[in-house]
Image 1 (cartoon, one colour):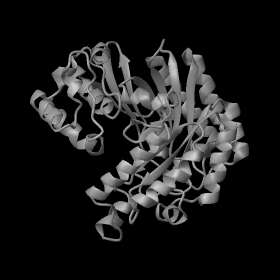
Image 2 (image 1 turned 180 degrees about the vertical axis):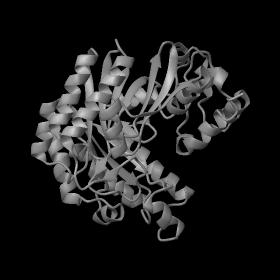
Image 3 (image 1 turned 90 degrees about the vertical axis):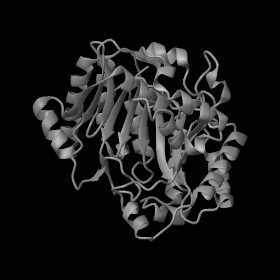
Image 4 (image 1 turned 30 degrees about the vertical axis):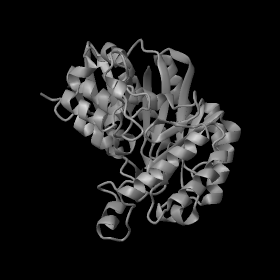
Length: 389
């Protein structure tokens, strides 16, 4: 699997929970941005010849603010650089209120075949709290348009909001599920990220998020409702009917290779026998100027040791319900899965029923249990904590 991530950094406004590289601008020179994105794409295509492109993801920011002609040009250029899989997935993130039916149609004509909508809530008060520019009616209209125009689409919801009860969340999920006709939902627990407005508000005591016990109760409701609907979690926050998983995100979680272009975009590419971590300049205007002047705005182009790349693959792969296949893991990175784990901690986590017991069996996947998933970050930290020696 080989993917292309394209970052569009602009939004109509900055959400108070968001720590992504997103910005608000009064004016955007779409032609200049098109030239720059194509130029940086050319640069990285020259470093990754011969791959078969399996997915393209337009992320942000709010990529639905992009000129559809730019989207079309980038898709066409990518097809010129790499042979593409017959079932290539081309996803566009969109926000209700930042796209209408006609623009959706233009994006479909440009080559987009999957849409991911940032709905975030179906409750009016929650939408106001989350700083969303759209209301519930606009959200439903956007979902309807996506369902009509795209055979594959998804939307996001954020739960574990201040004051939210398990019963309220169950009701919201039951209202959301009939809308998810394409069979994919992304359900994220609200987290407080440093550098956001919510970080300051939370520190000042202006609101409180659920405690650990309530957060786990909300998690349990999520799993119950999604399993009942035939859309189990295939990743800690993503739920889908079998076959409707996000192929691009699976590429990340399975430790695949991808090019990242646009401000702040990350990439993982394999060149001359070496894995490289790449990152582009974060500031949009500096990125634009440097790319148009020098052909790219790369800020990080660091070789990654085989062991460090293997640890990355463990940290990403344990997010998946199916876990990490040890044979595939070794074939991909040239290092055995057991060699990057703390063996004593693995046995302890198995005894605590946080890692599946069959993970010790030869050839069995390393897999986090249903009990371990709500505390996944702690499990991962313990399992690879002593892996740098």
